[in-house]
Length: 150
Image 1 (cartoon, rainbow, N blue to C red):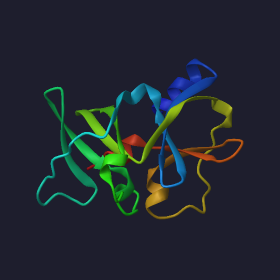
Image 2: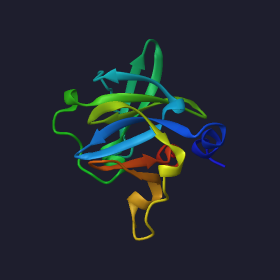
Image 3: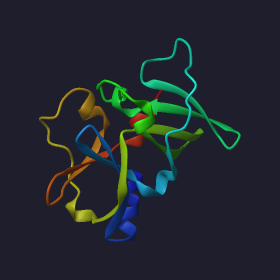
Image 4: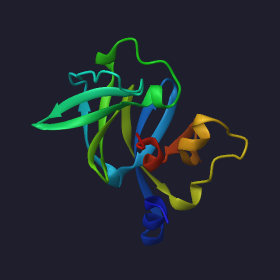
């Protein structure tokens, strides 16, 4: 049972920290988010995969930064200073997801969450945990465990 499912059993609502990559709205379980930071200086790691943007110093703690755009198969932002860092807690400690823009925290009824359509293939299918149709757009809930497998 994943975290979202466990939280759904405890209450009828689930909270997600949402953010944008290109024009799409994504979310992760808010319980896994430690903090949100504006652009921070990122130090590249030689010979790292292209989605591993580098390392940042978070008040003395060195945190790995994943470029979520690259992880999803998109081109990196042209101007990194316009991006933001979503610091999430993972089994091995804190990790940063570098995203285009932070949106807000959204609380949704658990019954509105649905599995991704079976027709979704490729990289996207590997990382999408659930989806939720909102009034104006689709919220794509990412599976952090799969995204963070570096």
